[in-house]
Amino acid sequence: MRVLIYAKRIYFNPSSEKHIISFENLKQAGVYALVCKVSNKIYIGSSVYLGDRLLDYMQPAYLGIRASSPVIRAIVKYGYLNFCFVILETCLPELVLEREQFWLDFLKPEYNLSPTAGSTLGVSLSETSKTKISLARLGKTHTLETRQLMSETRRGPNNPMFGKSPSEETKALLSTAFKGPNGPLSGIPRPEEVLHLMRVNHPHTKAVFQYTQDKKELIAKYDSIRQAAKITGISRNYISKCIKAGILAHGKWGFSLTSLF
Image (cartoon, rainbow, N blue to C red; front, side, top):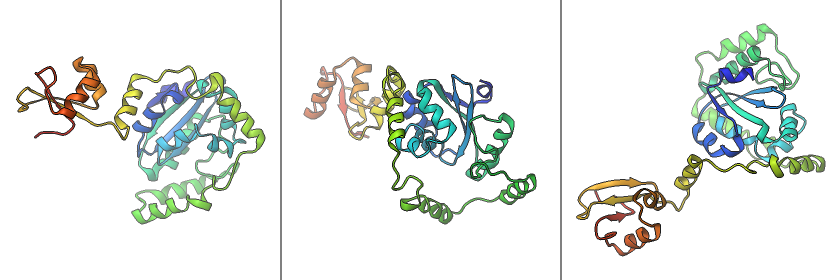
């Protein structure tokens, strides 16, 4: 897998690392690769929102309307366990197509139908045209108004997924791909890091503050009651009762859901 030696970040089990992928690539623009562990073939793409784009590949609806794409067919055929997601580089949003073109030329990916970044399938631009486009983009950034307009053009009826549904054949293929060992989370325990992020980001999770007996000194701040219990060795139920009753835990430590100072 030659592409891996150039990787900035590799997700070997993307289906079990969805939360990490989203967290690490939040609001990041750049170039990515999808690598099939079975065929060693790759697909290269780019996005101004890397986290969202990579997670798209784990959405049945997204796969369904792109069922004719070679890389999508490979994902359906081999399953997520046989793919790894790779971040080749991050860059400014206005440079993503230029950098994608670099990697397309350098790695010559087998799953890409077009050799040109950002072009329609099967359409190639002349070297002169590509040079002109690249030069025209230099030093330019999209204004907030332009970005908002671009966002609007991808909503509702303008979105390529709007009002579409996969064919029965595609549904059957997707159903098979998401069952058994090919399922996104089948047989793969979530890493503790992922579980921690899920707990911390849960809407009902609240931080816990531990204080000295006189409540004049902060001992520690925990992301949740669960974490406080794990680190202090005091049961979650007991900590919760002490917080509600406003009493010291074991007569020694004060716990609170709000900072006292």
